[in-house]
Length: 342
Image (cartoon, rainbow, N blue to C red):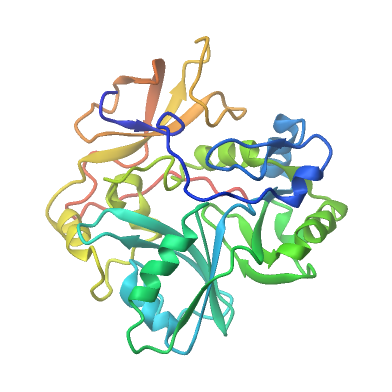
């Protein structure tokens, strides 16, 4: 697929050095590679970990993600004005996804966030919290907000699976709870000094410690894109389905809104996200996502590629399944086929 992008094919590098998680000391832990250095890829049995995350309960160490804390009485209206999401009046305990766009409408940051009544807690891709904090600081002006990159002090644990909600209830040491996360997950923000203790409590309650291989396999199976893996610097929200989950189309102006409105009302995005069933008979596969329904991936292809065309992902034949249809935009209502895991 010349000029197109497939999860796990394009090489990128996260700026900054990630601290190694204390959970890498667990038996069987194998450290993940880019972009998740510093946390476990698996703990010795990735298929068992994936089954637990899909069918029972699992806890995933995502402590390599960046964490921001935003305080002040103007925090929600201010974030509402800067991002794609309607955040004014977000109730304490409620969560949301939002995007920060460039002036030309390209996705720069994907935020998963919750407000606890006193602060908005945000977690973002590894290595990106500093750049987001710098942008937000530049937009404070005279408003009553304070932005802090607290990634060194706080970490993200993600709970997955149908039994995950019960296991995560009443857990000691949880500073903030983002529920639901990007595909039905429960994201717990805990003090870094409580990371091992909180994960241990969840395991004692019945969760299985699972690595990023299991998390990524289920994310891809749920047809959920990840910034920097399934996107590039040209990505706009319509291309990957974020228009349905991270963009509010009936809110006031924000940076990049003209592109969103133009595509939604008048045109179509140049590319579209597809779900790929990879040929498992090949002697090599792209690096990400190999769950029980077979080797899979997400990819961005040109909008004009026929929906029944067989594609090549890193030289591996792949059958495509439509996630974002070719006629997305132009006031077409998109119904994304996405699976929740709890």
